[in-house]
Length: 458
Image 1: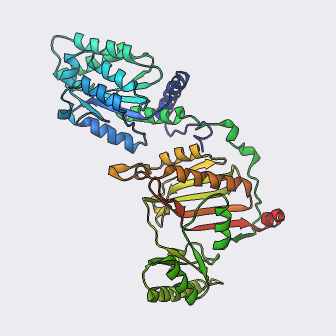
Image 2: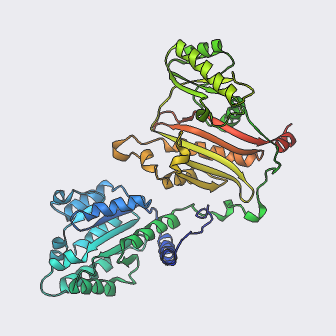
């Protein structure tokens, strides 16, 4: 929510200085027409470039996918690149090649920054490796730095990381020469610590992304929420909350409400085995925790036994409707997501998105935004999740239909604004399919203010 309001949260003075540097760089990039913030990594170090790319992912930095023109151009500039892992992101370079061709690094930077998919470039250079390949003074290295300064583009940011500059007298001198030539170059920043550099890039990605901060959509905290703060509330029954949520264009898996064993068997036969059976009683919130959910029921006998077990569990926890249940077909997808809504006394309606399922509390991977949230905002929220790679095709997985997921998130935002009587709402799990397949909620629960609901009733 800080980010949505244009604020940057920091924990230390060092982080504050990095945030200030990121803000200046982001303003320059926006003024120059930056269209993307995704990051490319290249550098020297015998495999260290892959580790830098991994560190980017751990820091929540979005990595760029190179376009075909950029790949072809880089292949021309780095002949034999397959010996260093091929052309891609990250790109591994040899220190000897950079010194043998002083314009090579500048040409690589120019070709990379010309790609519309790349907004920031992290170039890490091992000063010790460069020193080991240098002969005849520092003139070759000075020429590399001068040409690099000429290649930078204000609309893109090159973050140069000079590693191992303290590994001896010559690496120290090379690092000093680089800073002397490059510091102050438009579109380029110089760091000696990788951690600071990556914090800078992460802050820039957050600051440059269009739409992250729209003052017109951020509620004034002094206004508070518009919902009723009366302690009198009620939990909506399954049919009620599903009907309300579905009216905002949010699909559910097929479901049937049943009230006895025979209805459960008939519903299971109609929707097709295997099925899931769960309590629909409004007075049981965490159904799986108390034995009120049965999954993978493949036969009539299993449904009958499951019905009896759920009813017994519901009775044991004091439910007033132990025989009220839902029958649903078993469904699978690429990932499970939770979408939540809460009426805050300070901010009004707030939307939550996170990795869902029964381990939602343990994973604790979620993002918050103050309503209204549109589909573009929703996509940015998803990209902030640690589990985003699961949705974005990690390790050859199909890409999830995040557009459909974004529509659902935006729908819950509209619901929160138009129904202040809904104090809390949770869709969990939302089954996310691959692009072109179904994405839908499997379960929903909501709590409403009795006083506000009565006042708004026709």
